[in-house]
Length: 179
Length: 351
Image (cartoon, rainbow over all chains, first blue to last red):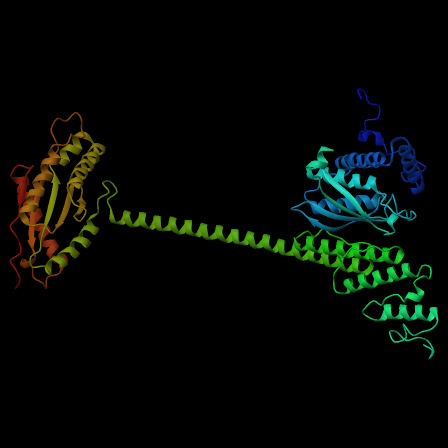
């Protein structure tokens, strides 16, 4: 691709200070989900399931990285401060209630949980984990914070009838990095 | 419970009706520790196996929760299990937060856990206040310690300065300001003590010298007092370089000096006196336009321990020795100056 039309930058979020004086900054969850699941549908039909999953994960990583650089400011001094900051931000923005269930700062292995998740809470049981964008989002944040690429995998999801999203995060292996 | 209703365990296999068997199975499952097998007769009842799986899972998870194991992973559908998962997540997060608090991070706050959140957050706020108090007191204590150290240091510096000042005044009291030599009173005090010691040493000997700069009045009148002072300093410096540290050398007054040489017999005293005379005479004259060297005359009096009366006080012996040395000095002056003259001993031995 020689010239790109949609390269993301934080400026594309726009000036939020006075953009919707009457409606405000919030919108209903169904609008967000309508857009996301329609995207999935169309992208899957065009590129296949595996590819659309990869696209959503990658988009999540990109979003997580930009979110960390622009919203998680000032940069947290340590991992604990990062979690506290993320908890506040995710709650404030209505993304979900973040919990950290386990952390190993030597190996950088973490177990994170998100309840009342924006993407999946209230969805019907589908038999598979759906929060692939969230996986990428968390991987992007952790990667931006640690300076190492991360792999995040959802192990519990509302859509697998768990009513809570649980993610296992760890640094990417060499093989994953090369992908 | 009615009489004809099945009882757990005992009636599980024997109840004739499927509903009774299901009720008995569920009762056993919920009441007993072990998990019963689903009776074969009711296995085909729709949904029953799923319910059994959920209940068995819930029972197992609750058992592990009851013994403090919140890490166990489990899979079961439905809201009941989801509530447990949420509780599990909250408790695991709370445990993680407690560990962070233990590491000193008092920014941790718990929410969505009702009274437990309130109590935890109050506890952390209280801890933070206590820590802030301790840190404040520690800072105050550190400052006090520092202030105290500074005070001690100041006191030590003052004591050092005081000691230095005392030493300076003591030296001023003992020494002549022009030459830095001991003064006359110190000479009398210390030389009298030496004479006391000499009385107890039959083989001991000492010499007393009186020294006077020749024609000093004329020199002063000719060249002025400042050059006169330089002459006195030149003479005292030349003599000081020849003497031992144990010798007592003082400015006796004006251009006169007195020396007490401990452990020195008359012959050695005379030799030393001669050496002193020659050394002074060889020094350049501070009055540059005066070609003549400055000379001194010396009277020497030798004292031996055996010649002393033990009943005579040391200061009296000293006075007699000085008088004899002074008489010898006048003889040297009379004989033409720039001379060493040895006095006849005034001491005739013990009575």
